[in-house]
Amino acid sequence: MSKMIPPHIDRVLFTEEQIRERVKAVAEEITEKYRGRELKLIGVLKGSVFFLTALAREIGLPVKIDFLAISSFGNQKSAPGLVRIAKDLDDSIEGEDVLLIEDIVDTGFTTRYLLQNLAGRGPNSLSICTLLDRTTRRIVQVPVEFRCFEIDDRFVVGFGLDDRQLYRNLEYLAVMKPDGK
Ligand code: IMP
Ligand code: MG
Image (cartoon, rainbow, N blue to C red; front, side):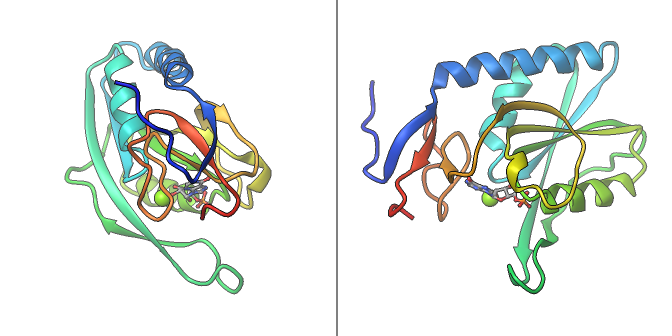
């Protein structure tokens, strides 16, 4: 059944079909890199959930899944990028091959914090896979190994990404109207 495009959406950036194709291609790269090994996918709640489930089904390896949630605090001007873990992983990652699954890497603060935190737990390897990469706004450098799309500076929603907790369930990625947020 076709659904209405919500009024605050300006235009579709990537269709469901385009996302499916890129997810499949990235899953193939991942399958190649980790061939013969088990992989642990760590999803960052809540934005990465839709991406993680789509990706996991396309990866041709034994996969484990765990989640953590973060919350950002601090002031955009005086103390940007302060992040803490609000819900931790259920299980240890010691000795495991870990792929951190992000919805979007923007300034890079969140991802850098998570990388440092997870690296301290002794994984065998630790890499980053993101649905969206906005390198033009990067403040701290992080090694993004796998990504589906590079995007520019407009705020996007859908396929897990929210605007004030809404629009995560859109099956496409879309740009908000400038006055829609
Ligand atoms: P960073 O720490 O600046 O890299 O921010 C990453 C987080 O900001 C992401 O996990 C998203 O939750 C949020 N974010 C950044 N840009 C967007 C966007 O365009 N739409 C929705 N959420 C965004
Ligand atoms: Mg978010």
